[in-house]
Amino acid sequence: MKILVIGSGGRENAIVSAIKKSKKETEIYCAPGNGGTAEIAVNVPIKQDDIKGLLSFALENKIDLTVVGPEIPLSLGIADEFTAAGLQIFGPDKKASLLESSKKFAKDFLRKYNIKTAGYESFINFQDAENFVKQKKHPLVIKASGLAAGKGVFISENAEESKKILDSIFNGKIFGKSGETVVIEDYIEGFELSYMIVSDGASYKPLITSMDYKKIGDGDTGENTGGMGAVTPNPYVSENLVNKINKTVIEPALEGLKKEGIKYKGILYAGLMIKGDEIYVLEFNVRFGDPETQAILIRLESDIIDLFLSVINENLKDYKLIFDDNKSICLVLASGGYPKDYKTGLEISSNGLQNSGRTETAEYEIFHAGTKKINEKYFTDGGRVLNICAKGKGTEIADIVYDIAEKINFENKYCRKDIGKIYVRP
Image (cartoon, rainbow, N blue to C red; front, side, top):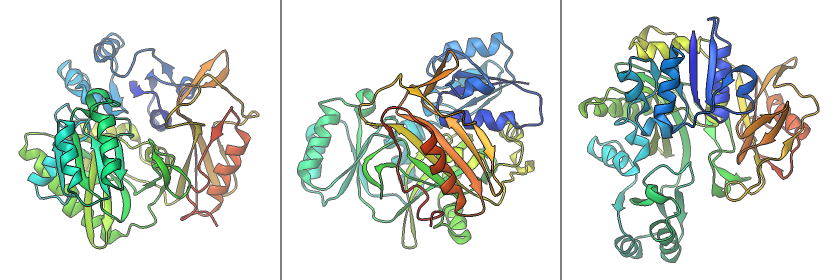
């Protein structure tokens, strides 16, 4: 079976690894891939936003299944193009992808279908937005409506700070077209929860719960990033809360999509804020989270290829989604300076450390995120460089990932020191 995975991050390395564990005979390609995917798949030098190039490759190479990792190709309508060409692809279509590619669309959708979210207004020019924040109680959350690689969200403490943020988005154009519309919403205090389900348009199944760490600094301080680590299961989530999320968020959202004429097929990721007994939707993503997926997929026991096909063929209800009963942790090693300015092309050394292994009580796997392989050597090629993941029953999994992190070296290596501390570290 020929399978194409689109993307170049740690999430895609984890997806390729999960596919590799299938009992089915597979030939795996990854476009464009990274240094880690090169070890277990054939990297294809086609960019993730080159939809025509990807389609041509899939047709010429008779690809049986394509799996889309990142949001950009989904927002560009890759699922529509592949489906129209008679190819099987895992991921929602362009209209469904507006839930992520337009925060305004998502907020309006939530309001229309009475799904609880923070109060908000959207703006298309600086002056109106500035006048609005002058009279609003702070703190406020300011978001670029379009895709911004997880960096388009700001929490402003006062009107002057809000003005500076709005000026940088509207006038400084720091997000380009993604910042042409800005959403300003009320700030909600509580704890954040990443919640992912898989849907075939008729039924859905939840993935195991996870908690990610978005801020660059220990104790969730500093700037937002694409994610600096994750654990499963989420230590704050009870079965009752899961049931409430399904009833008040997931099911109304899927029903609303149907009313909009959208058959949602793929991963739906709800970014939630839990405040007391209330559940607020902060955002939707239309793909696997990163790095949550890495921590989730190392616990997957059922065949991931069958999962993808059950969604495409709309028989998800018959698929048994099985995870083991371990805890898991994912630690992100980043380049110093991320999420702003950082160097690339730095050699990575690991003293012969293997990409996967096992101890008496735990298993680990290292996924490459921002790396490239040149002449059997690895070099940094992004802000988030490596994802060190481990699963087991107890606190040793945190010790394992931090021990491995110490054995890996590249210039200005950085990681948070508190990933999983609240949950699995002594």
